[in-house]
Length: 79
Image 1 (tube, rainbow, N blue to C red):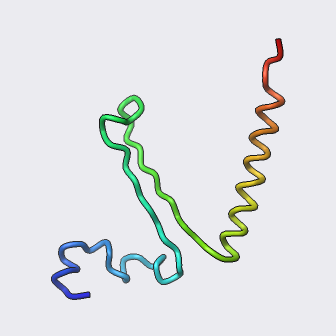
Image 2 (cartoon, rainbow, N blue to C red):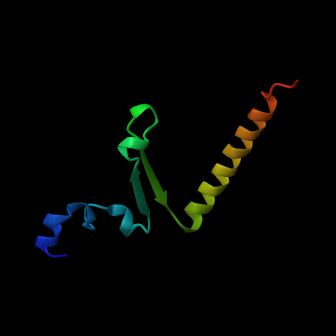
C-alpha cells in the first residue's frame, strides 16, 4: 500500500487491522441519526470468524438462545 493511499484511508492498513492477518473480518455499522431509538447512538460491530473458533462460538450462541427461550417460557403469563 502506498503512503498516499494510507493517508486517505489509514484504517485499511494491514498494520492497523491485525484481525485480517488472523483470518478475522470485522464489520461495523452505525444506525443513521433519523433511525436511532430515542436518539441513542447505536453501532453494531460484527466479527466474522471461521473454522474451529466459529464452531465454538456457534455452540455458545446455541446454548444462550436455548437458555433465553427456556427462561421466556417459564416467565410467560398464562391466562
